Length: 295
Image (cartoon, rainbow, N blue to C red; front, side, top):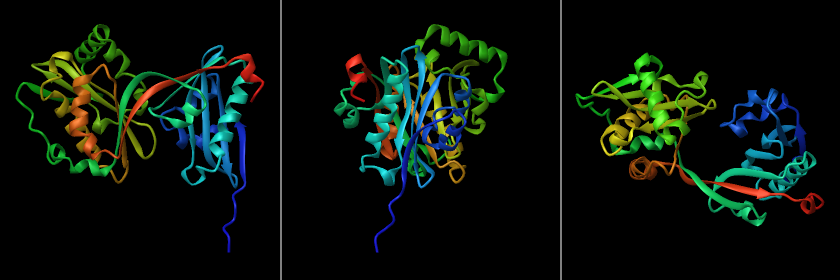
């Protein structure tokens, strides 16, 4: 007896329908779709959400593709190709000339469609409970007397001023803005670190979906990057996450290439126990009038 074949529908979604597909775009806050210029195309299998392509406008004729995914059982059946073609069709109708997307390198799907490889943005480590087997996470690190760990939600005004000064002086700290999206900060795993009474780093974690914590801003001042400071921050944050893995089973950390010391630390201490390690790049594609006529 043969299994029933799902009825597949690919269609544009209105801003409020996207909420039913939000688990395909966990790093994107779907609430902005109500007001920000955006376009979403959904895949439904037997009437249930099964994939999503989501793009938002960064300029009048330029978009960032923030999500492009098809549910695992439907892959390798040409559905991703259909979703891509429908997304591009909708974008070209709206005069889009330039698009970019964050994806791994290599990425054959994009290569076959003549997307261009741009700069590397980060190395992304995805982990689950297996990370708790790492030796450096077996127990809580004893704090040296010159260090003090402070819950992020209990920062003093002086700590905030110091964090803002670090952001003024360091482009990486600005990019890893710890004050972004305060409503989703996961308090138990978010901390600041002081050295001799002065703030020198932080680990701010956001709950981006029911199942996933994103270690959104892990930053240590330059003079502390070759010390025990990175290990202190991540040891305390991940151990608090481990205590709650039944509730929130996945974690993601992205380390930009401008922090080579932190990346070396993550490659040594995190990668061997991670579920996946990806080098994420910006891929971009420019569309012209001729291409508009082929989609």
